[in-house]
Length: 227
Image (cartoon, rainbow, N blue to C red; front, side, top):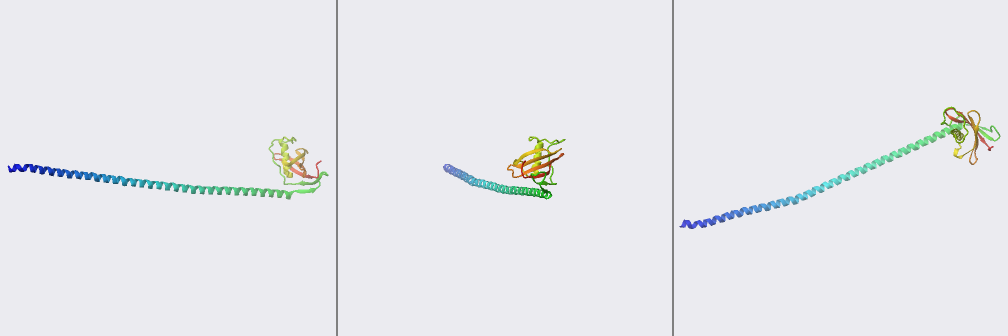
């Protein structure tokens, strides 16, 4: 009987031991879950901050690169503008030099013509103050071809080329020229009487035709009056 009396007690003790072990296991699992939650939360929190920091660093680097590129582009633009300005200035200087050389050549040619000019007092008639002949005079050129016959028509090319030769010999621009007479003076020879519009200068000009080269002045008479 004593052996049977201890069996229920031992059974109750065994059950308490099992519950105790079960509680320990459950508490351990709960603690493990809590620890995992803490680890995951920390990773999410600190990892998120790292991602934000990395993104901020990348954005800053990108902005710095854009700023550097912008600075480089601006420097390149300034350098190009400087080069363009230098090219423009160089071209302007070359143009001015060319103009100066042209002017000097024209002045030298004019001086040469003046030096070769032969001036004598009087001329072919009483109204002539003095006569000018210059071997440096050249034909003025022509757009005509073939056999030439002088044409005394104000609308003709030949007429305009004769006036060009007269202007060349006298220095009177056609826009300031009054033509009093322009006519035949022999085969392929013409003579014209002109003045400035205010009649302060008056000339009789003799011109000859040179085949393929146009009209050439041969003599200029400075007049006292227009007859």
